[in-house]
Length: 229
Image (tube, rainbow, N blue to C red; front, side, top):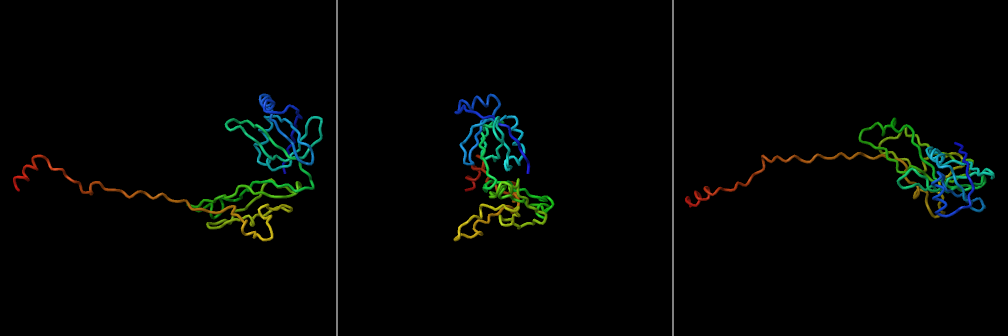
């Protein structure tokens, strides 16, 4: 698992105005909560945060956060707000973790050998990823960065369900945390399947030359017709 060490600054200035000032100083307002401790407001270096989030594992790793003058804390990222049109991180939420308490988090699903699979080689077939991430529960020490699915033998018509995923030791899917009166089959969603590309049918050509045309008689033709009558 990747290790991310984050330096933070404690802050006491709160509110929207304080957050705007921090952003103008290229800092990200953030908060740490959980772990039977009071929430604490912090700020992070915006440039470093932009580098962190380039790595997918940042979102599913145990982060080591240290504020000036404080102790190191193990946290996970719980929420991140982005600016709708600019590459700016508006706010981040971190949750403290306990090594002895299970956490619930969504992690990505990675597929292997997709292009080498029978379905990947067959024309007109698309491998459809119905779920790109799954929610798991585990102790922090067992937290995986992602779940891998090998598609080397995946063919047209095949499906991979949640129950087909190979989970690391100590990891469970929250989808199967069901009651006694419920069946696992009802929650065994499809993760990956195949679909056929629909061909667009060409419109039938129309031959205007063969279509009968209604000729409008001229004035002289009308006069000749009356004489014949």
